[in-house]
Length: 640
Image 1 (spheres, rainbow, N blue to C red):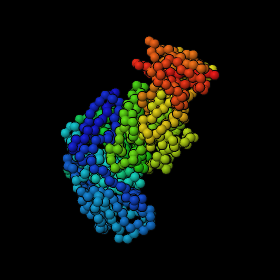
Image 2 (tube, rainbow, N blue to C red):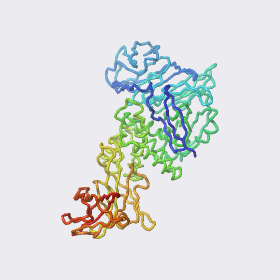
Image 3 (cartoon, one colour):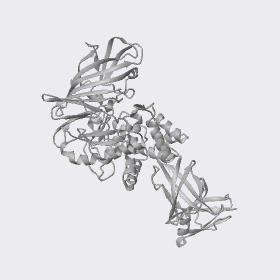
Image 4 (tube, rainbow, N blue to C red):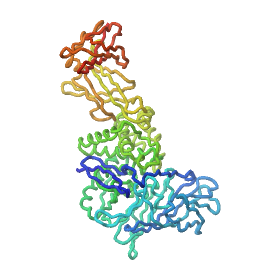
C-alpha cells in the first residue's frame, strides 16, 4: 500500500501545501516555519478563575455558509460554581467577533468584551454547586491563526468547504468558550444551519437532519466530556459511507465517513483500513472509548489531520494518518494532556501507536523502516528535549522531531526496558486509571503506571530522555582477555550528543554470532565505561540490530581482528616489555595507552617500536599508535 509523508510549506497566506512522497509516514498537525502572520508569540494564558466553576453542558447553535468566512449563533453554557459566593464568570473570545447580547435567567445582562475576554458580573452571587446557565449571542468573521482555526475554502472538486481546527489556542477565534486544560465540558449539543445540499460533520451522534426552505439543520449530540479545542464542525457537499467494527459481544462500532464526492471511490478503499486498526488498538489498549456513539472521518482542505473527538478531520486517507488520528481518540481525546508542555502525551503516543500498526499489521520491512526513519529524524540535530519549555510558539509545541518522533521513541525505549508484557500492561492501566479517564493527565501519572508494573523507578530515565537533550553514542570493543584465563570481554563506552546529559543508563542490546547462529545479549550499562564477560568468543557482534535504542554513529570493534590483520603486539600477555611490529616497517610517531576505565597511563612521542611496561599494573589495556601514514588501535594484557 502506498504511503505518504506530508510537508507543510506556509506561504504568506499561511496555507499549507501538500506534497507526496514514497515514504511510510504522515503526521497530523505538522510543524511550520513561522511566516509573517506567525512571527508574533501567542500569549494566551488560561484564566485562574476557570478552576472556580465546572462546565456541565454547552449547546452551540450556529448558522454558517461554506462559501463565506462568517459565523453567527448562540452558545448556551450550563455551569455550577465550585467555590462560595460565585459572583462573576469569564469566557474567551477574540475582540473581532461581536457580542450581540448575553441572556441570564431570561434577562439580558451587562458584560464587557475587551482583550479577547468576555467578563460577566452576576446581579447576585450563585451558591456553590447550584447549576445555572447563560447564553451568549454573537456574530462576525473569525480569525484563523495557529493551524487555521476557522477556514472557508474550496475542495479539490471546486466546491465550498468550511472547517474548524482549534488546537491549541484557536477555539476562542470562532466561538465564546472556556479555553481550558482544567475543565472538560461534560457533554455538548451542536446545532448547525447551512444551505441545503451540504452535510455537517461534528462530534458525537447525528440526532436529526431537518430541511427548512433553502436551509438544513444538523443536530449532533456528544455525551462524553470533551476539551474545548476538540469541538469542531466541517460543512460541505459531502458524500457519506460507513464501515463497522464488530465486537465480541455482538455490538458494532460505526465508522462514519464524510468525503468529497470526487474522492468517494478511492476513499472507500482507503478508509476500510480503519477497521483492522481499531481492532488492533482495542486489543492493545482497551475498547474504543466512544463506542456507543461512533468514530468517523471528515475530509477537509488541510495538509494533515486533526483528531476531533469521535470524528477526525483528514487531509488524506493514507494508512499511517488514519492510524495516527485514531490513536488520538485514546491518547489526546479520552485522556488529554494537562499542559501543552507535555504534548508528547498526545503526539508521542499517537505516533508510536501508528508505528505499532506497521509492526503488527504490515510487513516487517515497514516496521524496520518506521524505526530507521524516526531515529534519523531525531538525530539530525544533537539537542532538543521532549519536554516543551516554551509553549508560546505553536511550532515548538508541535515540533515533528521532538514532540512526535522523540516522544514516540521514548515509549519504544520504555518498552525495551520493561519488556512487551509489562509495557502494554502499563499502557492499559494508564488507560483505565479513573484519575485520568475522560480527563487530563500529567507526566507523573503516566510514569506511576510504568513504575508500578516494572517495580522500579524511572526518575533517571525521564530526567535523561524527557527533560534532557540528545542521545548516546556507543563505542563497543570485544576481545579475549589473555591475562584473565582467556575470558571473552565486551567493553562499552558511551559519549553523549548534548551536555545536558552526561550518561544514559540503559540496557544495551547486542547480537553475538557464532557459526551462523545468533544469541541476543542484554547488557545493563550503569557505569561508563563498563566491561562485561560473555560465555564464549563470537565470530562477530552487532549493536542493536532491532533498533531499540535511540543512538547514532555507534561502533562495534573486534580488537582481536585489528591486532591480527594490521600489526602484531608481542608478547601478549606481556610482563616487562611490549613490542610492536607494524606493516612495511613503519615506525611509531606517538603512542597512548589507557586502562579500561579510560585513564591514560602512558604516552610517548619517540620513534620507537617497543616500550617498557614494568611500572604498569596487571590487567587489560587499550593503545593508540600513530605513524606517519596510519593510525592503529588495539588491546594487550599485562600478566605479572
